[in-house]
Image (cartoon, rainbow, N blue to C red; front, side, top):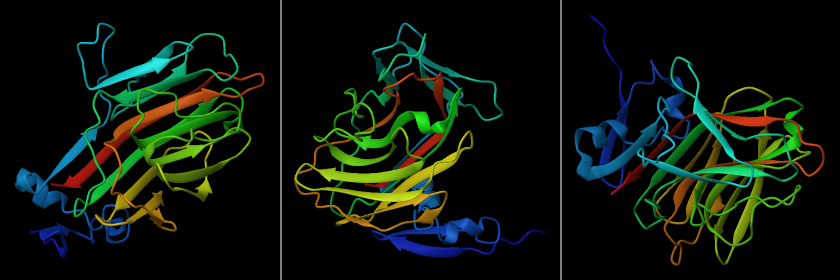
Length: 261
């Protein structure tokens, strides 16, 4: 008979458990302090959103989980991978600085006091040229449905509220940026791998601290003053470079978001 060794942690008076013998990364990664089991047992404690992209909206919009904007036409279809994968790309012959964005139909989250929040998505770049040659962004923003990346290697737009991971053309590093409208903080994380899935995540502690994670490793926390922040929603965006762009796409394996009620 198997015996599960569990450890516990308390978040906003919610007790969570995990089994480090089975999931050793759970003792240190972005989900280590998230009381997922407790939330699943009692939804009044919090919410969990998970999508592994086994299905995607059809053309007439009857699947209303996501919408998209694109100035080059969108190619976003699941493949036949074992656990579902969505490919986000710009359709047709590549044109400089064309982009596509997939975004949630609602801004269902807010950075609020005592409302800890956890976010993680797994993504992979695919390019006929090199991963150097495109821009990409994902995370939670108040401006979903609006182009989030600037042209060339200029990074993210200036005006938004949220927490966003991104890379720019001619650079193989991931960056993490938080913005409350008054203060914007940007930090460099680890390398962006070519054609290999990576996990981008963060934990907001319910007060003024948000900590980014790349592949389970934590990086320097940002101070995030939340008093005047707007509601935020989920998005992914890919943009061609400003020269002679190759055909590029971003594979999205899954996304998971949890928040204390």
